[in-house]
Length: 316
Image (cartoon, rainbow, N blue to C red; front, side, top):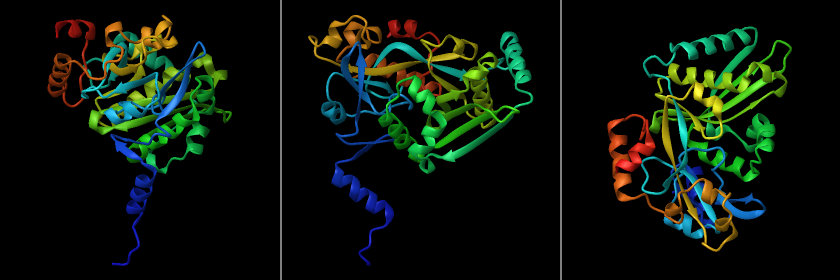
């Protein structure tokens, strides 16, 4: 034996030395687990995968090590962790009967295609491991600035996609202007493509580039055999209603001392996102978790999609 470690062994050795652990598509240690967030100047913490990644795995050790108050969003639908919050993922059921032919939707799609007829469209599917922070910043720096996305969250995205493929769609105007760059993560295990972010040129606002990006990504999803395009949270984005055919609950964990300012502020995410009885709950209730697993098993592939979740939650 030569005594020379191969690359994977070297990386494992480095991670062990740094106390780095792996869960799901994520790697973490005590130093990079969290990102500082603020509500009305009140400091709290979220995970570094929160802004750009779907289906974030957690462990008891992660939750124990994280500084408090701590809010972890977007546990997988088939996880035992997390409680449903007051928002949903919006799914574009690209294989749903009538999706592409529904009158209002088909008319809007035709209008968008006509607006962009003379524009140049490109798409590329790249290994996430090939992307760098600089690459992602180049594609979305304005978007990240506008939405206060922390540099650590860019690193979180790079970490998350290192064993996945990333879809990059671009649209260029006849004069050479870059009109939109849309970045999505391909998730074969959930039979979906997840829309991470879209940066579009405000000078073309009258052509609705953000909406057109959703259409382009939905078409790619259908053409490549996936069941759903995931538009991300839908609560604050009315335009997504044109596409959404189903909603999936978003699960989260909110950990906070009852006397902390974040818990006492009625406008904080602890109150707007969570039901009072769900704050400081780590695990999904047994009845809800079992019901979700049943729905997940029956709807494979495409986990846990529920058309009327409030009615579903009251029934279990």
